[in-house]
Image 1 (cartoon, rainbow, N blue to C red):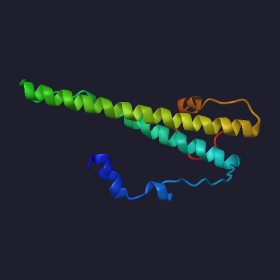
Image 2 (cartoon, helix red, strand yellow):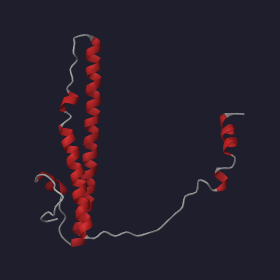
Image 3 (tube, rainbow, N blue to C red):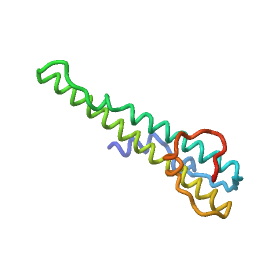
Image 4 (cartoon, one colour):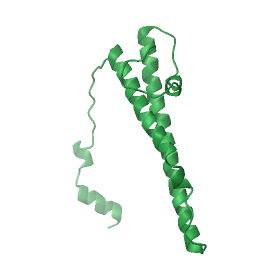
Length: 136
């Protein structure tokens, strides 16, 4: 008995009995103006949090070994690579949050019938607070 036969015998008809079939549900959802504003704010708050974390990673990417031996250098290189990977993850997460905020902002602009606004302009204008913002 090969491994495929063994797996098939263990599952004993699992796939043919409908256990893996998905269900399709339909539904609707709607956002009003306040919901969209709040979504933009929350995504931008999260983006700012990631941006703050990116700024704090500088020490994680400039580690130097405690000694001059090969092992110290190797540990420092590994730590720097880890710090760089973490910083890249934070940047990717920041970009994702800004993209989601932009989608929500575009939906709000469409809803209000106004010209589209770039959320990066909002980020560049200063700290994002949870209160109402002019123009959004």
